[in-house]
Each structure stands twice: as structure tokens, then as C-alpha cells.
Length: 127
Image (cartoon, rainbow, N blue to C red; front, side, top):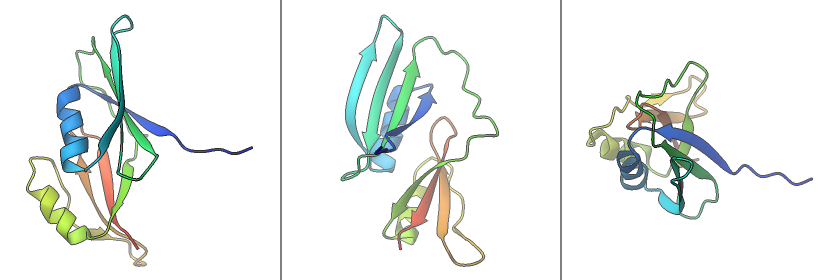
């Protein structure tokens, strides 16, 4: 039985701000958008160019309070060819970016950036 990961759902307060972050900061492209006015929500799917794995942004029309991210959520991770240059680029945005970090055994170098709703995205140096 073949299996394939499809997407990660992220609930957002401001769809336009979130689409801007995922497209203009992270470089993702919108793969599809579906509006369900009768059910009062909109879905926007995004993926990195050449990748089939998607992030699903869910915008619920009647959500008035920010979502609670909780202590069980970790992060979404993407890899980049030049971690230093990407860190410098993202640090020029108005989004929260951590310093560069590395695992003690040298297995990975990375940093985190938060999207408009506070979800963490881990950016890892590709090997």
C-alpha cells in the first residue's frame, strides 16, 4: 500500500498577510485556492517550486480571537542552499527571526522564522 504525505494545515487570522509571508518571504507558490462561503472558510494551498508537499492555509470567516498554537505544535521545516544568505534576507523582513544555530554533533545548521500567526518555520542548510 503506497502512502504519500500531502499537506500541513495552518489556521490563520489574516489570509492576505499569511499568503504574503508564504509567497514573498518563503518563496512558495499558490497551487490552488478554494472558497466555501456557505461553510464560512477559505483554503489556500502553497508549495515550494518543484515540490508536491503543500502547506494548507485555512481561513475561517468567523474566527475573532487568535488561535492558540499550543505546546504540541513544533514547526514546518524547509531546506535552503545558502543558509547565511537566507538568514540575512529574512532578517530584513518585519518577521521574528532567530540567530543561526547548529546541532552539537554538526548534523544540521538552521534558524527559525515566525509567520504572521506565530507559527515557526525551521530553515535548514541543505546538505
